[in-house]
Image (cartoon, rainbow, N blue to C red):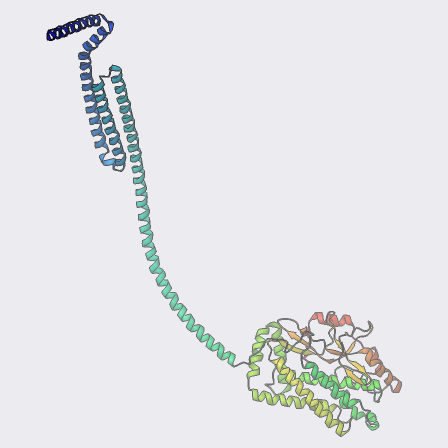
Length: 532
């Protein structure tokens, strides 16, 4: 019973369920949504046909893409090897596009996307196609640019080829020039070798010639100091002062004063070229004039015999000719004069030493002879010995001067230089000394009467120029002696060859303007032997 009730209940439930289903189906069919769904299911076959049509179009697009890719690859195979990397990138993009298309197909198949979605997908594909087209155009432009670059490179290569041809031609010319230069170099080397041999031969000959001469040195402090004095020459004049003053500081014997013949050698000496008063007395003025006269004679004798450029010749006239010749040569060409003098100094040095010794003896003899009869024998011998010492000192000094390149000459002429005055011989209580630094312009009316110690001149391609001041006797210094002679005797002897009267001595003068004119006219315009 219970089992039967259970079956009845199940059947009742099934019936209710069936009735509910029928009711629901009826409701469903009467609903608008059902109609829409039924329309959708009816639209599916048509959509499948559209999809199939789009698939065929997609296949056509793929085929077109494949053809374009094939053409693209064939066209760029030879010319765009360098753009291979970009092509690979493009293939990657195509692969990506293919993947995207497959995904879209999958989406269409899986979700049954409507036509709008398919159109959207088609638009995406169209954009991709446009991009591919743009890339293709860009690649075409690149190919065109590459082609233009290739043309330019070909032109550049042609230009380089022309340049290479020119360089080859230039190289050939340079090789020819090198051969010619080598030939010229060899010729020059031969000439240089020949010139070197000639130079060596000339140098040998020059050394040989120089060996024939005495080596001269440049003038320096050993010869002339900053005070324009020849060193050691002042010592010579100081020694001369001492010897002459020592001789005449004592009174002369009365019998000698009155002996006219005893005075003859002094007043008529060939070296006393200007007249100065010489009273025959023992007054201070007379002693002063005797000292001045004998110093002038001594200095001129030393200049004539000792101050020679060479002692090669023994005869005085021959030596004077050589001396004058060298002076004139120094005026025109001092270097040639130096060479000639050096050559002469080197000839027969033993003979020159002998001749210089004879020159010393001649000076001693000439100067001592002037006072031989004025002093006693003991005084005479002492004076003769002192003079010999003075002359030997002068000889030693002049050896230095001889061996300098510069040409030095002593002159006794009273040439006046405004910027280079001579010094005055000083007398003081019967003692004599060279002039100090004060010049001889003590009085405008006073003037030089006699050059005692000569000026030394340097001669170098022109007129002689003084380098030492020289020492003079001024006219004013002779006036006391001249007045004494007038008081004692109008006919008293005076020094000088012509023996002028004392009034002539007092009136006789050299104007400074005349002296300056003589200097301006030139030293050598006067035909006077150097040193006189």
